[in-house]
Image 1 (cartoon, rainbow, N blue to C red):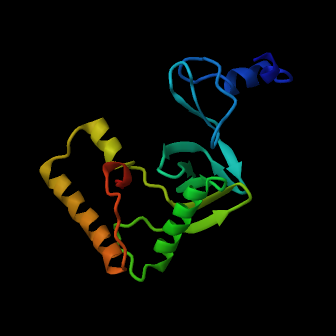
Image 2 (cartoon, rainbow, N blue to C red):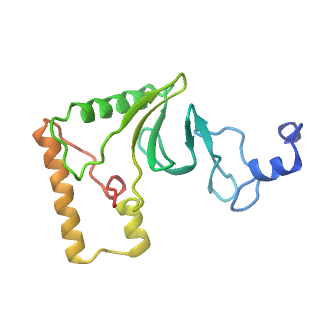
Length: 178
């Protein structure tokens, strides 16, 4: 532990290496600058830059990577060492870029990027969060609002189907609310 702190100012030690929830020392290994506290299990994120993008907030882990907020954008990021995750991200990009017609209920893809370490997709950031978060915070939706959401999801899935794709992972964690 002392080697870890050698050469750092007291403020850096307090801000960078302690859990924000319980003040326990954090492990040094961090994937995407996120570390899980071994004491309280809280996720601790330290903002970082990838080229000219500042990843300011951790949003969630996905099946193949992590999603971050950068200004008014959401960045889905994968480590290029994870070949399965990289293949899934490339597949997602190919599907998006091959759509002939895009429904207004599909989140638009703005860009694909990669550097030596990471690859990612850039989309607009939706303030409303996921359907799973909404239900957890507010409980079940009323019938009318739920029906409207089901119709919007159906429109998005139908758009993919018309373009020759099936989306097998429809779940509250993958539905964004704007």
